[in-house]
Image (cartoon, rainbow, N blue to C red; front, side, top):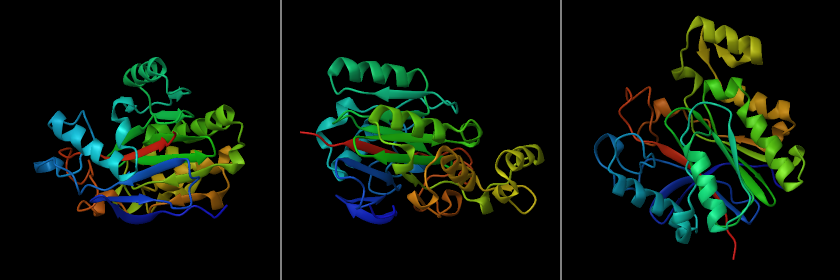
Length: 268
């Protein structure tokens, strides 16, 4: 299998980052902020439903992303968790209506990763500086939100292990995609947090005196879990330096929408 890589492309008027070599049954993408209907600070492809945007605009934006990845018929089955910066993982094993509803309810109560082995159940997590992760194996995928708390809790590793258990595919065969997030040049943290990350992941995750390379820490989490370093593709664009492409909570002082990581197994 080719090494994973993220390529920028357009589909149905929406700009995405994805990998054409991902296993065929899984469609996934990281979104950019253009191609939607939202206005003002949410312009234009805001996917976040809890940041103050018009809900009808958010729903249309989500529909457009599903159209772009070929899953337009499955909006009603969308699993979009209430992200709480923890390490809870919700597993979706069936596309049966009751199972999907149960997964949606569990996710709404708070979760930062969804593992899915069911066809036609799209999963969306939303971001505006934190690290999005998509993990893919034959027969399943995971979408993960890894802020600094989740990274220290190693939520990426937990999701990879659960995905491996659910599919029977070893972690060593996981393809991992680390999406757009705040870069080290834009992410100055407290001396205490810098010291904590340096102790957890080594001094290489700190740039200068106290700028945190959160993406590098996420990479170490995945490698520690058994994902080969060569099987991880990373977006190297900082959200805080590219607000024309992505939303950034830090650069936009909290008034912004959310881009997303969307994935689905396309079934019959």
